[in-house]
Image (cartoon, rainbow, N blue to C red; front, side, top):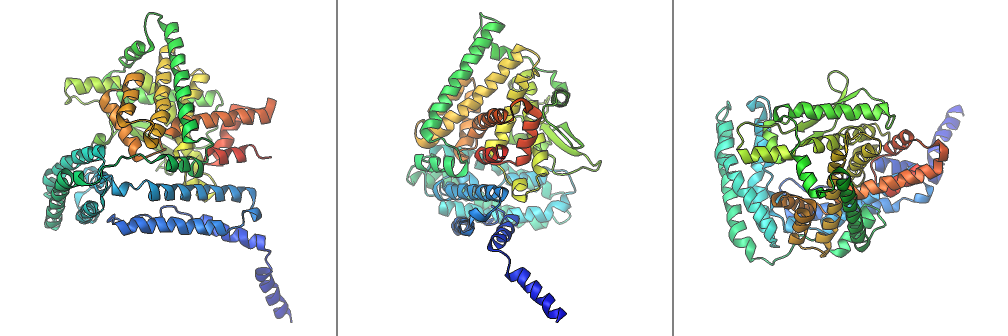
Length: 545
């Protein structure tokens, strides 16, 4: 009898579980297994895999739709909305912004090959990875020839440049690497086939692609608006975002002009900006100069109790590895992914060092883009309390979906917010550095204008270039790099300024809620602990009772 009663109790505990609890359990299982890249395109980049990925997004959205959100806890409901926004955004881009039909660059996955060759380590230990990548090259390029059906002149121009520059990889760099292998013969046939496929692809780009229907990279007005509302959860339309971007651009220009008169009323802000960019560290002390201001930013954050940093952590500025230096002119920030051998969460800001072998023009261009102003303003953005600190909080978020997912609207917005925070709290040493900070903010203002502009038909490619050269002060080649990046990643670059403004808005709302109990430290801690999500969701959590 005791056994029967016990068995019945166990059965009842399972079968008699209230529907809400089962709903919560099913949803938690979905969220614990959530991985928006699980249905990603296969490595050979064939057309069917893109369609399969789109169908996978639909299935995942369908599963989310089956959950009754009214039965969820508050935090589960936030996670549901976050998951939905991620999947919806991926679906929008895959179904409407079909780059695989128009951008030849996505079929040239050569950087990973170059990185494998150039990275430190025994060449023989890299052989299997290199073989795997080389084996895919002919398949990927052949699929590109079959699937590219829209001729975008700028994409073709960039792709030809990329393809022709990749010839040296297959004719010189891989053979040179191959010569040092114990089994060098294993790569010979693969390299030959990859080089032959590249030659065919170049011929296709030059002669066949221009015969296809001409199009452009614009996402389109309707799709852009879907992205704003369904992925970013913003209350802007393309029209209101466009107007907001222009108004904010004008506000920053006014601040620049006012500050310029305070510094030297005989010079324009543009003239002063050129002067300031020509004030830079000794080129051979460039790494140390960056480290100095990283450490200074950390001291400022902690001494002024601006953001709690409760972990044993550090940011080290290091020379960028040789094989990575050609991927960008400045460098890159590598967040801490876990504790190092000394049990410290160590992030690295990897800077391209000054090189004696450069010609005079290259040396000068390097120095004016590594001036004291950009170093002092960017150190907070990348390190304290920007990406480094935000990354630590995200790494320690107890909710898996929030640990492993995020978007530029908060992460890049947080970086720019820290530039503004440092200005507000007296970190910048003088007005000249403040002017440089405003110029860098103007650049992010411009990103809002040209991103919505080029993707909704309000601006042409050349209009966007003119904005960056004539009104922000970029050289034409640098402006082209900007617009080219935005053409391939619609919506990413608005994240800097719009994200910053959304964080500022949340700060005002939180201050109203807390009254005399408000502190910056408390606000920053709370917002960082919530996660890297669309600001609308973060505000719901921050302002909830």
